[in-house]
Length: 595
Image (cartoon, rainbow, N blue to C red; front, side):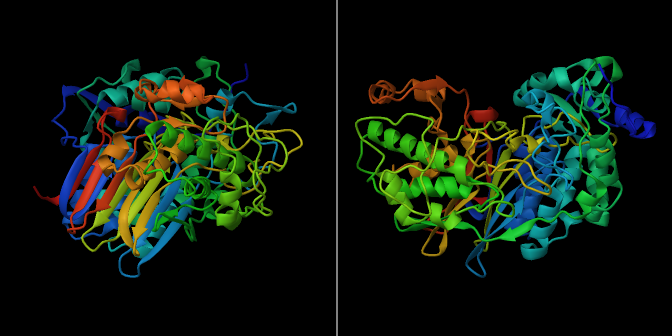
């Protein structure tokens, strides 16, 4: 088998082999994980206690929600390196208490300007998905550093260097390995060991990191310090970027592994031209509230928003649990049918965002829901340009695969500003390729493109293209009541992100659940597939048999999502909420707790 040449400097590889370490001795106890907290001065919720503590530190020292959000995200790049980091991208939704406006940043990774629709084709046929993932081909231009810098410039009060310091400290001193980190490492062990830099960082001496040990990443600490000193030009126009391009163009694979790690196309010119895009949120009126989400290139705001429009035609608060779940699943099925046909990067394809979210289209699609029978998938899309009751427009479009990783954080500050931010490197472990000497994994986001048209003969808005952003399902959400934040939420989970965020919103607004109860509730995810993925706890509900009698088919989808949220209570306090169990439980905190 062909082994690709490696042009990453030997000194950089050698540095990676000695700089990162898991200290065998038992680490100091991490901050406690608490899934719910209430109080004053601001709130933070994430999947990780160290990251949440980093955000609280910034808020306590006078920073605002944006400053704290970047600090949390940077810390997650240390403690959740298989889900996020500066080698990836994300979407950032911000409510500004001074102006009362919601704004968003599209920090999605982009394909090289040399890429075209044949990116993942060999000899005219699509690559095997696993081969595409663990390769340079899957790596898009990272958007996370540009997102941090743009958010701080527009709305922050602290410099990038200041807000990176808590994460630098965690990377230098180390964090305590938990079972989730060890499990995710084990999941990636076979491919991690094929890349010397990745193997040395995450599999020291060839072994899994021990639960309870301290995991240090001095290379990443040094990279953060360089970004803090020089700004993101160090990555987009400087030495960090040069290392990224060398790594993805000549993946540093172990010659003895026999792995064909295909070279990528991203160049230094692609890095230099990257921009995090400021854009308007999607807005949907629902039960007298305003639900703000992220517009394309993510499909989160349009797909979740369309489902809400459909569900506005049902009085979910008065339905029994069986009918509530039935209509939630059917609205999700319909919205995903339309997503597959119409949503992609709006700079390359015409995306009917306003039409997908229009009341007329919602009414036309809502008429498909029969309270006595489930629809079958794949369901054909509707025509948002010409809404007609119960009508379809062309053949059904198959649902494409998205990796289940990613991470989400929510932050609020003392002044009332809120951030809902989801960031990712796509698959758990991304491409599996660590930049030698830099301490972070590269993304595999370009595998979110369709490798070939999902349905032959039907236009596919999500094919690769030069400088194009692949479609995402990321769904950071902020819900306003009378122009002010009521709550914010979001989740990781690939294409299940949309249904998880939707289920949390419905649970909080329609079903009388508290935010923490809505996050903890059993989940199911229907994405225009023949069977609905569901968690074991959902499959154990008595409503399952009644839903099956309506025609629903379920498969065990394992754990779905890992949501977080913050809510403003009527008395002015903030409540932060995270998962009590999923991904080992999340971490919620406030600056000044109250009883």
